Length: 352
Image 1: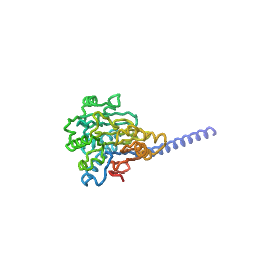
Image 2: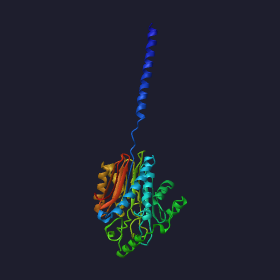
Image 3: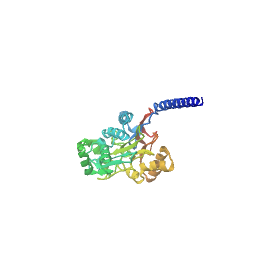
Image 4: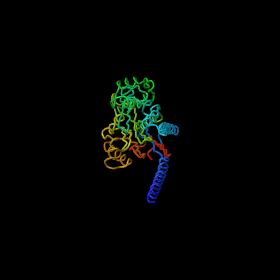
């Protein structure tokens, strides 16, 4: 009898354990079948400067908004389909590089000897791997060359003819000088040379000359993909009448571009020399990591204290590891916009 009771008890205990495990397994399955929607987002800029509503016609403003929206959608589609933040940055910047509205690629300005010298950089926030090109004259999309440097060399930056020869080996699209030429841009160079001055982004001296054309503005993008990886990229034609061989902040990792998954991604536009001296893009990340500032607070510190104190002008866009977006600038305006997986989208031009 005692033996029968022990056997019955053991059998009952086994059934209870099996039943409990089965129930727990069902609960676990229920939890894993409804994963939390992954956040993704991107933010772009098309240059900062003296951009006021009274300086733009309705048609000009519409053209800029349309092109910014096209760039946002190009990058957003990549992220929505599960693509990488690097590819999203590339596609968004390509749209702006291919437009004469912005000072990058097709819209690149003339240097002091009447040629274009373009710079670009890209940074992967997961690995901190980076690529850049500087002083290139014939690469249609410099951001593509920067990505190629990142992925296909042990280097971070290639410049001039060496960068172009490298790009040709990988069959990147190249263009001759005619592709980058516009008569109004050339006339702008002549006027700047006559004044012996330098024109950058959207500054006041062009209001009564080329504002009807308004084809200026360094471009940049920062993206966060579904895997939580941040990337940042920047592309520019530099400054009108800049000295032959001058390189600004756009291809300098930590100055014009920076990305780190544990903090943020940043792209800059403005007076490059001041962004180099302050390591502006990296400084935002450092303020967040070591002082606990929010992205918005860090951007404000860098632009309105560090850049301002040196006499520099410009702006920064940023996106942190949680998908929060912010921008700041000390000029009258900055072409900018963002789009998020939460359904938020905004495009702005003026200081508002």
